[in-house]
Length: 216
Picture 1 (cartoon, one colour):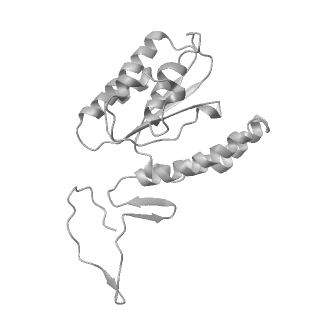
Picture 2 (cartoon, rainbow, N blue to C red; picture 1 turned 135 degrees about the vertical axis):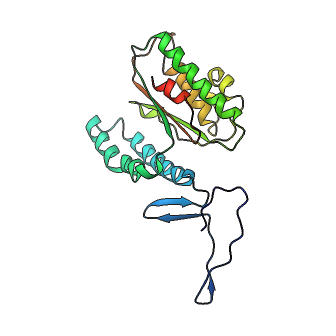
Picture 3 (tube, rainbow, N blue to C red; picture 1 turned 180 degrees about the horizontal axis):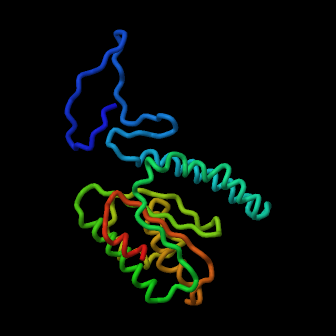
């Protein structure tokens, strides 16, 4: 495997060992990490997300059977290690972590919402092959969404807050989460502020000053 960020990769001579040609691959798993030939960690993140999501589905089946402490032990033992293994190597794309509290004012909400919108607009107008993903979760397992890396962010900004949460297609997790951030994380069905604690995380291969605005 030849690792390079170049769009047009140079041809390399084939490698032969004991009269056998070594097959070139695009990804390789080494010590639990999926290394890609483009120098990104998208493949590794997709793999661990899929594994964690399957285990979360199992955990969800026990949420009305086991007590909270037992559920926490299962999560800390079988799910969290998947996400934290060697994270200091691949976890370089986390740009923001929003802790949505019930006492957040309308001004604070509007400020963060505008910062997120600016971030996505910069991403959309950058022109290169940038990737973005967003995941939201809370104390309720039903609010755990699969992280999705998307290249096409057209219309996501304008449409995100106008979609019916129950009708969002599964492949549009970014829109799904943005709808969650814009509506459910800040208000209940009566339009009042919810008392639930929500956490929102955004991941992107794009560096932007707007991520600082969102954190503040």
